[in-house]
Amino acid sequence: MKTTTYALFGLLLFLFFAQVQAATTVYKWKDANGQIHYSDRPPPDAQAESLTVKNPPRQRAPDPVNDPATDKDTQGENEAEQKAPQEPPAMSEEQKAAKAAMKRQQEEQKKIIRKKNCGIARRNLKTLKSTVRVRKLDPKTGDYVRVSDNERLKKLREYQRKVREYCR
Image (cartoon, rainbow, N blue to C red):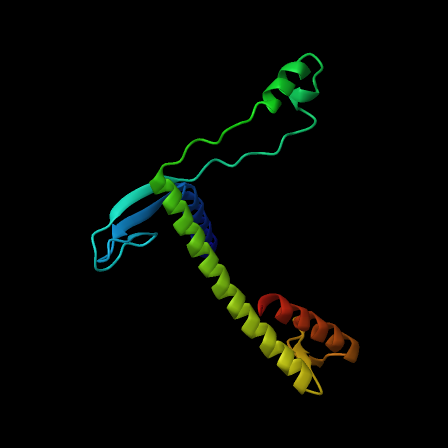
C-alpha cells in the first residue's frame, strides 16, 4: 500500500513540475572580451542577467469534422482569412538569442547521444562479427539461449545500418 501511495505521490509531483516548466530561464552575460553569451546555467565566474523565455502554446491541427471552413455559409469569410498572411509575433533580440542558445544546446545533446549510440552499435556489430555462437538472455526463463543463424544475420544487418546512421 505504501509503495502505491509513494508512486502516486511521485507521479503527481512530476506532473506538477512538468506544468511549471512552461517558462524557461536563460542567463545572459558578457565575458572578458565583451562577447555576449546565453545559457540555461549561470556562469560560475561572472554576473549574469536572468531572462525568462516563455514557450509558445502548441497549435492543434484543424479538425475536418468540426471545421467551420467546411460550412458553406462561412466558407467565403474563412477563405479570405486563410489568404491573408499571418505574421508571427515579433521576438526581441534577447529572445532570439536565447532561442538560438537553446537550439545550440539541443544540438550538442543530440551529438552526445549520437556518439553514445555509435559506440553501442559498433560494439554490438563487433561482437556479432567476431563470435561464432551468439546467445541472448531469454526474458521468460532467465536462461541464455543460442541465437539462430538467420536471427544473427538480421541483427548483423541491423547493427550495420545503425553504425551507418549514428557514426557519420
